[in-house]
Length: 466
Image (cartoon, rainbow, N blue to C red; front, side, top):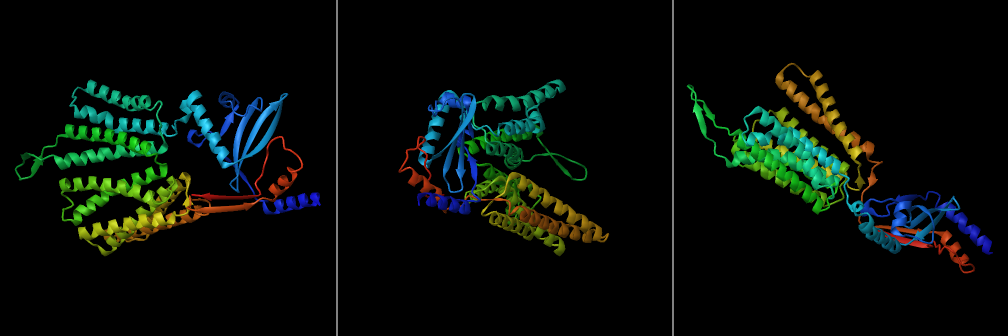
């Protein structure tokens, strides 16, 4: 009878768990350690009952249980043991690993996955902007001194952050927000200088045309210093808040779109679109508002980098649609145009945010979606150019409308291509319940014999993912 019970349990197990899988889980998530090798295991003093350990790997079953696989050598031959551990035991093991790391390898606790990106983006900003802005700002007129300052500033844009982040955390989000801050700082510096500086008339020609003074040196210095300040601020904000990369991408994208909202709001409020001084201040405020909006939206659900890119592409398509309507109606009302473009963009953001609910699109899927959206727009614009007449107005109407249509189709096609393959996002309140008949077999067997490994399998397991 006992043997029949065991056989029955095994048959049920095979039928109900034929698709069961075990996925490798990190042993120390904060330290990005997936496998403990021979050297680390020896330093940590873990599992002394097994001599000459080769590796320790953690797996998680579909029922939420954890299995620890320990590989070690006996008389030169590889041996392997698998131990079920509870969530409490795993938490204790991870805490012990972190404590040991603090002593024997503290550098492993530092997340520097985005350091190369940070240094590369900083060098790019140094070569393209900071290198010439600083000598312009300090009014270096000698060519030799100017070029030397450019080279030294560019070199410093790499070596200074390299030294400062040598033992500091640098995540992908930190690198992204730092680069975005540097780029935005250039624009904000120019806008702020324009807003706070009084324009002076330099000369008037014989026809009455006025020419204004433009202190390019001070403008360049303001742009450079603002860019550096925002790059540093972006790094610290992302680092101190432990921001994920998806959120940093969304904040960066909506911050850039915020310039358009600032300009549009200024125009609707009565400012002429050519009044750059008044519009400049509004565009800086729009940029700040866009970043706060990105942070708010990303806090409502889990955002991967791919999710953020899909939402930003949806916002782009949402802007192209009213643009095509404006072209078809030949509207020249600046306030109406600004309102329609902002409304279309906002609806696009809302649609993108809705479409990614329950999905985690990868970065590669997000990049391909971006390429597909642009390629669709180019395809539509190309077809529109071919079928339109030679009349300039007709050409503009057709190309604009077909570009919007093509971009929308491209976005939709790429979304539905990746939708089924995208991982399900982090859901609130996911309850998992599982029954394992094999646990009953071990439970009955352990009443008659003692297990030398303290090996146990749960008969019933339940987990709740927050």
